[in-house]
Length: 158
Image (cartoon, rainbow, N blue to C red; front, top):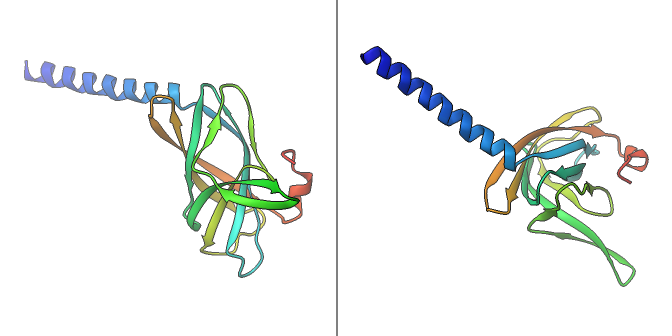
């Protein structure tokens, strides 16, 4: 009888974990296309990360992190009185099925306090944190490819 109870308990806990994981996948499905980071020159301490985000349901990008930077911020660029200004934003709204481009001159992710130079071809790990309309947060691990300083002009997000 003890073996039966232990087996049932193990199966039940596996089912509960699988159910929780499945529920998490349902509300966090955000497609990330073409993530990349601009390569840097020696002693450069900041760079930008870019990608295309498409959420399956209304949600928002609330933060990003990377081990290559001391801190990471969400930013936007706007024109004010013929002057381009960059500002940190607390979150980025993602409407269901509407792609949002993170690109030069618009929304983007800033990696600040770089711990090393980022060279073309480096794979930069990042964690994106999303929040759904119920306040549930999930984290997505991605790898962004470092591209040359001049590659942004040919990037399809420009």
